Amino acid sequence: MWAMKWLSLLFGSVMLCSCESTYPVSFHVEAGEGQSRKFSVPHNGRLYDKVPFVSQKDFESYYSFPHNDGSYGIVLTAKSASRNRIEAYTSENLGRFILPIANGNMMSITQLTRPVTTGKLVIWGGFSPADLAELAKAIPPADEKREEPILKMAPHTKKLLLNAQELAEKEEKKKNQKVIKEV
View 1 (cartoon, rainbow, N blue to C red):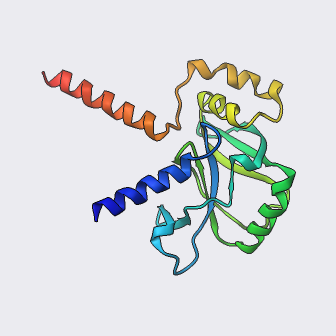
View 2: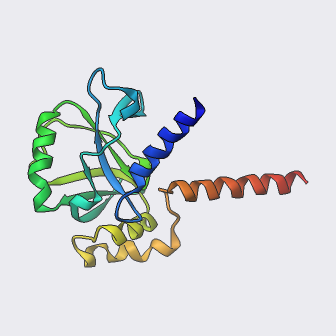
View 3: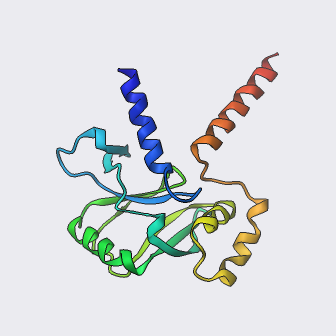
């Protein structure tokens, strides 16, 4: 039984990380009623489809904006080939929530109150300048001069959005520090 759970977790992680870049970004729609939990990701009492309706390969650029918590949010602009699909998908799912996932981290959800006709999707915060520098390697900034001051701060800031490997390394380091203190 544990093997099946482990394989499900592994499969889910591979789906989230099997993207072309080292900094995957994806958007997942709230699961429909009666949908199997096997094909869903739980977050804050809701279930979301494991398979994203849009991911970083569908975006041509981003721009950041300051969020009121001191982090940065981003607006992702879809490639023209993906815009009709995004509009159709969001039209079909009005009233549902979408869950952005960035670098394996679940971000703030947004409710679809109208179709996305502009090809622009927003993640409302949670990025540090270091995170944005990593994102810029996968999705270029819409205006490099506008993003330049933020990206210059990257070496002096910590990542807020750690991937699974970075989280494991951080936990191992904490564990080792605890052992050293106890000795």
